[in-house]
Length: 635
Image 1 (cartoon, rainbow, N blue to C red):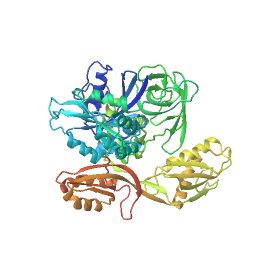
Image 2: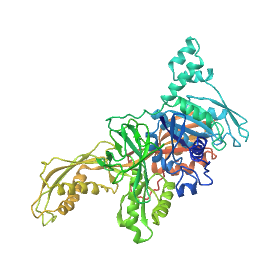
Image 3: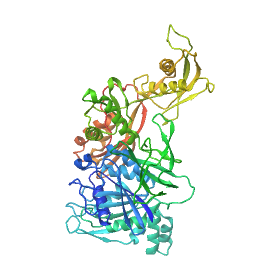
Image 4: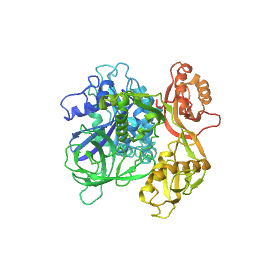
């Protein structure tokens, strides 16, 4: 039995969940066809998902065709849940990118295709809803080549598109397919130029090879609700996307990644693990590597107390997915063995909000619930804030609404969220040192000696702490008190923003036995650290978003003038009549203004998409944190 792990990706409402239901039903995995409208689908099993009719969390379901097990990963379509898509991409063997034959290529579709092409993940394009009024085929193919990828060829044709009589016929690889393949396959190009012309078998072989390496994209048509074209799509999946490596027995150490976590009825956490090598069986002791929010790597060990392999096998082998439970609980992103070849590259969220319990007696349960939810999604970044509130980082307003509903339904907690604000960050500008010697009863009243050096760390490293003092010079409890206090203190920098990408080194230490306690080191560390940070100086950074705007040709000048006035840095302008595509990067705090003003400049014809990309030093004259500037993230 070979295994294919296939992701279903699309813009919201393109039909991902409906296609998943159709595939499961047609191959006997479920005995009735679920409906998004009726709220009884297999993968959208949460109450919020069923009421809103959207996918919030990635879900796994499986069906079997001959000797192949296909694990389907249904992913969210809304941009606020980009973290779920990010984690799914890492564990896939291939993807199906859905388009609606009515709505066509949408903003989110383009963002997803860019990610798929960057990862060179084998991808099949499926044009859904061919039986809906207004469905297009030939014109849509031109849009796909212009807006998604030029390297695409249809392997099906549609008769009576846009009517309930729509049906799909196969279109075997032919000369038109060969012409398209010649742009990415040198052997096909040579055969077309120098002869002899490639045979149908030659074209089919090249199609499979170029699909497998992610450079070419076969296109199929169909209807998830009506079932047309789904058999042809499955045929393409089995024939064009290479299967995962078969499981191996023996002493190979297991390697894998946790890409989803679900809470259980008794408070336990079930983790979904994709295995790349080795095997895992019940009761086996595993050690996972976890990257903490401050940049440190820690180990999480425990025996597998529950193992449910998707497909029903007793042992998890390489290429497969299983739900497992380990005492102490796993988090999304925990890795078994070394790092994988395909690491997530989506930027972290930039919208910050404060959460408070509506009823004061629920303040402690609220914080516990948010920390539990942050374990399921480490990009949530929950941390304590002033006045008993909890600070959260999110991708957008829809995610905030879903989080409020989750707290109410799953935890029984009514929570209030402040309006989202863009999150600023500080980074050390240079190196600074400070020290305090004991006893300073008249100044600090702490029996401790501490010297600290603050300096910049590598970009993306978070925070790191190290020692230059002699090993064993301090009791372990004192060392731990200093390290924990350093990271806690740097949650607020010189301007009030959090400090990141820093390295703090303990360069001097001392204590007096039996007078000194850990509390002395916790009390003195912030005083020394603040002085060292002030001497190092910090640079305030603000988040940017990469944007893409498709606008009518006659509005190009007005649109670029608007974006320039908002602080945009342009990276490209392509196209012509009837539309231009403008790309660039814009401060996140100005994105919402761009979204609100574009329709008026473009007669409502603009197509806008944006995503978090990086942060940059705040330009002179701009406002920093605490100004109340509204933020927005997504499309």
